[in-house]
Each structure stands twice: as structure tokens, then as C-alpha cells.
Amino acid sequence: MPLLVTTVSEFRQTLHAARRSGKTIGLVPTMGALHEGHLSLVRASRAECGFTAVTIYVNPTQFGPHEDFAQYPRTLESDLTLLSGLADVVFAPRDEEVYPPGFSTWVEVGSVAKPLEGVCRPGHFRGVATIVLKLFTMAWPDVAYFGQKDYQQALVIRRMAIDLNLPLTIRVCPIVREPDGLAMSSRNRYLAPDERQRATVLYQSLTQAANLVAQGETNASRITEAMRRTIQAANPKQIDYVAIADPETLEPVETIRGRTVALLAVRIGKTRLIDNMILEPP
Ligand code: PAF
Image (tube, rainbow, N blue to C red; front, side):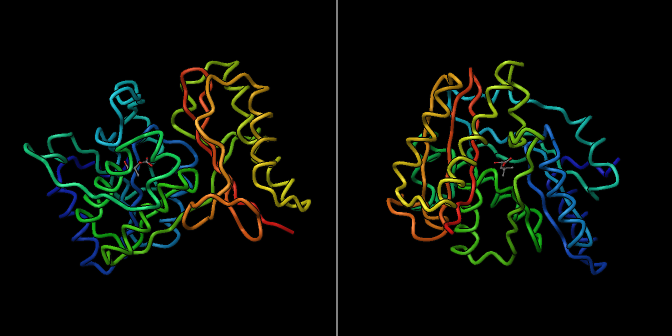
């Protein structure tokens, strides 16, 4: 089992000792309920850094009032087992440790946080940027690892790191998928068997977009309409968005002339899933 610490001061002391012994620090922030996607980030950190810290904290400030904060899976014991031999330290704080009484300081990232998830989940990226900056200032990692599955989140964190001159590297690691293409996510465990099967439509519609672009289709609306038709066939509860956007700014793209990203958020039953894929024209 990795060393488990629950207070900021223990976490700081552990990382300070590692740094003093000449090790570079890799940080993998998570909300727990770990799966292969998370473990791929931890392995990336181990390959690159001398000391790997994983944080497990279901951050209340990034959930909206009607979202799944209460039922978000909390599986610390099995997470620690999965991290055996992979993480050097796990920081799993309580809320009081992270948010002191009277907490009122927030990080608000600009334009890249506004569309897509920013529209559907108001305040979400403010909560994410704030907790991630707090974790950065607790750990002062050399490298921090995030998954491409949360594409917009990675852009928001990158923007924050540049804008605040944070002395660290942000690495974004590829999406890890189930054999049928479903992107791994802690929320996949909410899916009932028939929903799990229907959820593969996210990946199918993204590969459809990638194929259309590879075949020379340049009209983004034609592609998103085709994607929507594919998704509708799986009888989703709701399509929050299907978008083709600039991969750096997330501004909508009408005519595909270079690399773009397709992003979507779809509700299958009560479960909201997101996914994305880079589109490369021929
Ligand atoms: O991607 C997540 O799991 C969370 O948004 C993060 C980055 C750990 C912040 O709470």
C-alpha cells in the first residue's frame, strides 16, 4: 500500500523530503474511483518522475447543486490497493483540510472555460481551477498529469498554469478506452447494463466524425448532424452538445481546414458522459 496522508502539512513534509533527496515530483490529481485511465497517468508519472503523488478528493466546489456529488463513488480502500507499487504517496484530505472556514478565494479562467462544459455546468471550472491550484501549491510538482478525456479541463488548467506563471509542466495523456471504445470514466459505473451498451454510441459518433474528416468532409455542421443522428439512434436522455472546435481555443469551427477536436456530452439515462476525439483532415 502507498503511504496515505490526510493533512496538508503531512503531504507537504513528505514531498519536501522527496525533493530534498533530489527526486522530481509528479502529481496526479484524481477524485478516486480509480480505473485504468487514472492508472495510465500514474504510470506516466512513474516513468518520468522520481516520486509520484496521487491525490484523491471529491471536490465539492466543482459540482452544481443538482449534480452527482452525493452519489459520486468513494472507494478509498480499493483505490489504495490499485495504487500499490505505483504511487509513493496518496493524499486524501477531508473537506475541512482543503476549504478552511470562511473560504472565499477563487480561480476564474477566461474564454476557454466558457463554452461547452462551461455552459452546461456553470461554476464547474471555477471549482476545478481552484482545487487544482490549491493542490499545486500544496505539492509544488515538477509535472502534473491529466487525461485527455476531460479535454476542456486540460485546456483550462494549461491556461491557468501559463497565466499564473506556475513553475510546472502539464502533461495530458491519451484517453484510455474499454475494448468497445467507451472512454473509461468513474461515472461509467452508474450505467445499467443496457445503458452501458448504448453508451458506446459516443465513441461510434466520434469515429464517424474522424472518418468523415479523413474522407475529405470539411463542413462541420454536416458532421455534427451525422453524429447527432447516430447518437439519437441509441435513445439518449439528452444530448448536451456535439461540437467541432479549434483544439486550442475551443472556438467553433465551421469549415475544417486543419486539426480540430470533436467534443460531446450526452446523457444516457441519468448518467452524463463526455468524450472527444482529435480530427485530422487528409
Ligand atoms: O478530473 C478530475 O478528476 C477532477 O476534475 C480533478 C482534476 C481531480 C479536480 O478535482
